[in-house]
Image (cartoon, rainbow, N blue to C red; front, side, top):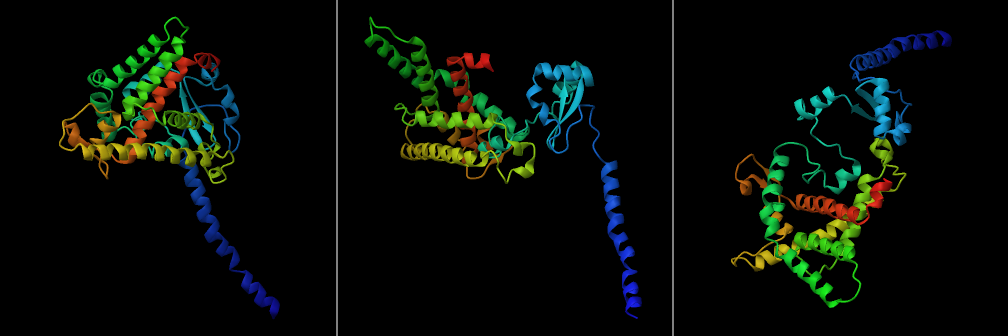
Length: 330
């Protein structure tokens, strides 16, 4: 009697199992049929893909792969799919004919976090915001007229000339003087400070940001390792952005207070922060209007990201010119 009841209980199990197995098989089949078709390329390992080839993906390494797989080939770096183009015809399609599709720059975890989720122009997606930001940079921040109007340049040059004059008859390291002059001009043109107080701290922040921008982060390629943070990248990112926030927030507040105190007075030559604060708002706004002043409004995150990326690029170029052997070694 007990055996009969047990057999009756087991009979529905195969039918129940079919209800789970068949949908799973159907989903797998649909996924397999709809899988993306990629160009030919070297077969990779499970999970890591072609990451074992990273050290060989120089221009020579890519040219060697192009000879084997053709002018367009596919690489899988962890969970990221990349396509390398070396054929002139395909490159023309990417850079000219289909340039709108390929215009957005990829951003790593570090770049997204330190640019406040692409709040600057360099890494922003192509669209109305990028177009208006480009117009702002060309017409306001880095225009020739703007550069010629900076009294800070003449003041810093006068200071260096006086320093050289006081050392008449003595040896002078002209290279170091020109380096210091350029560094001080960049800082003063950006923040309007002639005391250069905090300049060394700010340069250290930018140097750490540059290191993080170029650092290898396993979570960029295998996202589910991000929570483990095996390289300690998350801690470094949080620390350096907190330092950046503290530094630039204090400068923005000083400029806002100065602007409120000088309300109604005649305008004087401002710096980069003043130019950006002219478009400051609590909420970002972008339109395609021809009037730049009414077409874009920037938040503090936008302003901080623009300052950070712009000055990082300028200081990086300056330090490369100071130490050209680093470029040769690279």
